[in-house]
Length: 177
Image (cartoon, rainbow, N blue to C red):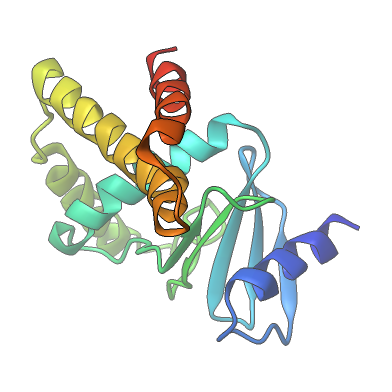
């Protein structure tokens, strides 16, 4: 059963969290969602595109969640390289917005939604040049991490620099593709 696989991934990567109860939330198209211990939401991408979506969400929410007038998810754990990949945040209080959950006197709900959308629309959109610079920086930060992980530990184990050049060339060629 897929839920058991997800629980195993949670327990494997998050030692401080003991999974006591789990409820599957079947509404998501892009993610399989679990509510864990009634206070954590875990999102598992159903497809490969979900990984990049999680990365984008995390970058956006990390920078902007504190400036929005309503509670939004703030990821606590993100494991994009895990199998299966997942991210988790503390459960938000309240009800999901749907026709059944909107009170008859929906003015307060409409005002909150309007305030949220207004705040969201005030967020500056970066120019394509800024996005390119950010992507370039991210690309080389990942490259640096890969070099550290694959090369430096070999040097520490007594490897010679001359022996590592082919490995470095292999890493850089992978980055170009």
